[in-house]
Length: 300
Image (cartoon, rainbow, N blue to C red; front, side):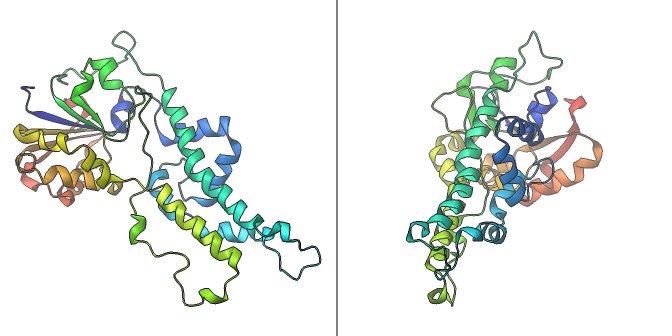
């Protein structure tokens, strides 16, 4: 590939093209298809009214509320209606919540992504006139918008979190808090005094954080060849990425490549008020301030 430009594609790219790919749209989909999952997310994850903080919220599971709400399944061993058959009821209910917020949430997310309407050149309301399909693309989106709308060859695009147009591709949805750095819920001085049902539930909840962790380091390592191929890049264009902390490892890995660190970075913004914060976020990832410029979507 002769083009020396790298595009970094985020969800704002799909939104600009009229694709209803906001987390609010995902919430509306879940409301229609799985009301129990909807309630579980709203009850135990601080995802916001429109689920705009869904990924980061996965790291802030409301453990206390889960234990309080399900404590009815952990009656005293001395209760008149106690039965040995109920010894695992509490743990079972806790596991149901964990499975709902990990496995079932990902399943619904995948189903939603696969039904998103992707415009074609004939149906698109607008297109970017300057986007060069011979460039290289790091896409954080799951959709094949680049391929279907702009004719970008699939081998030019790395869908770092999976691609909806590949049936064998797992779609990655998760938080950035590495579970290995998080203390276990059973790492406490009074562990000997806890009900065994509670300690087992703690183990299940500890497992939740592993199930919902976005393994950025592993994904970077798996696609190491992509990073090493970017040796001749002189321009990086960020289209529609929020530059959120959950994806910081990818940007830090890019900036670790000397030519990319020295490249000119252009961040496309929705409005002028967004420009200073976008530039500051890139600088926090390690991009040199003088190398950063911004423009509006209408300017590309």
